[in-house]
Image (cartoon, rainbow, N blue to C red; front, side, top):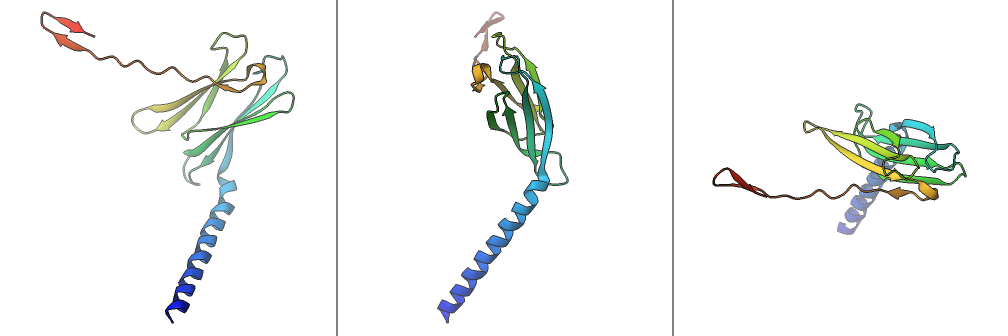
Length: 153
C-alpha cells in the first residue's frame, strides 16, 4: 500500500512539473521584445552591420527586462550574441571611444530603483573580433583628517 501511494505521489509531482515548465515555455515568446535595431558600420570595413538589442520582459505588466541580449550580424554574415544584465530601456551609442578608427558600442541599461544605478558595457568589433572593453577597476582611496587642517590620503 505504501509503495503504491509513493508511486502515485511521484507521478503527480512529475506531471505537475511538466505542466509548469510547459506553461512557462509557451508564455516566454510573448515576453520577448526587440528594443532597438541599428544599421551601422562597427567593423571598420565600410559596410553596414546590423546591431540589435533584444530583451525578455519579467512579465506582461512591467517594462523591466530580466534578460537583455546584444545581437550583431556582420556584413559578411557572421553573427554574435552577448547576454547582458537586465534593466529598463537599454540604450546604445556608437562612437570611437578608444580612438582606433572603428566605432565602439557603449550600452547603458538602467536598473531602476531609487539609487539611479545602471549597468554599462563597452564592445568593439574591430577586425571582425568582438571584444568586451571592460571598464577599468575603480581606485580605492582612503583618507582621514589630521590636526592643523591637514588630510592624509
